[in-house]
Image (cartoon, rainbow, N blue to C red; front, side, top):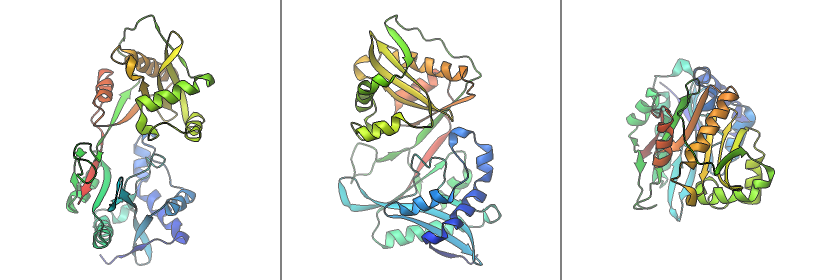
Length: 324
């Protein structure tokens, strides 16, 4: 197929919107809200173009845009001589795929030519590593990345980054049908569960810092914590207390996605986390949620065991693909 592949100009953002919304209409209708697939708005496409070192490439056929890919160049943390290319999605764009082809041209090699052009441009310019993601229930993505020479690495260790700590890894999308009864979880009388209060700010900062430092790359700033606190997508937020001290925090968002900042390290291995999780799921049931979804990396083994203990299906995964 004769394609013209080029970088997108900001004035052409509408082309990406049209391709995206055509390419992912089926997924938007098929997947539950927790996957966050939704029509792309032109304002968001323009924001993609404004992010540092980010580029949108478009495949044109007879003057019509039929495919796109959005990627971003970065340097390796702690080693700015190593250049990376990511097709990763940000948290805000969890459901917005960075690679799409309109339905009538799918299966005809458009995505292959598009990504091959981007990867060749990157590597010929001295780039070192390319990463991308695709769901394990999307065989087209698996075929595409495999054909291009990408390799799925559940836990990818990249020596220039670390000889032990994974640079990137697969994620588990644990899902629970909330129509099913929850397992009973015994807990001591000293533990109390209640909604989050405005006076809990100091305790919440400590929980994020000690139990989920990756959420804010360390201690959250005042602005970052305020943004989390007033997130319009948040719904149920519960804390666990012992003799009035807040020792744990869990939450869910309006689309059924669960957030687990966790329990303070000194209070773990006492079933406090399981008890708090039980109350969160029970509150979701009472509020009418049909599905609960937890997104966690495969390296978070304790979290996966918690999901399995409550009957979550842990088979859906977001696979990590590597090209080097």
